[in-house]
Image (tube, rainbow, N blue to C red; front, side, top):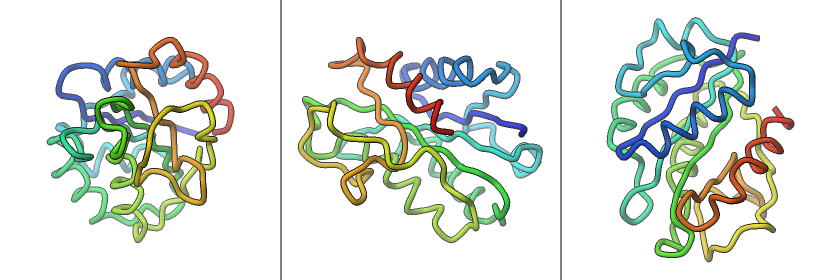
Length: 163
């Protein structure tokens, strides 16, 4: 299965996480893309899309995703697997932690994509609320490089094993 990782990052944190996830999955760095460069041609080359966004302000997508999500929503993603990840600050933004992932999940519901990597437990996280939690579990992989960076590698390893 051909896999790519697509990220939106303003400070470099989500880009670093995208590369770490790609490495854990055995995905070559040539298959890691900044969402600012996303095209339908890129998407069409892959069977599995791993999409990541940092969460900004009060739970917003990273800026480059606003165009990227429109590109994806305009496509038929039937037959493609989509896995989501996000980074956020579970302490300062405890009530909107990783909401960007919830936005990606909601926005891609009508594309025909099959979501993978969902159902990841929230038990080991300290936060109050997130739109990325459905039925008590994450819709993808939530990461906090500010407060829980010591948990990141293990979280990535566990999440990748579910894909």
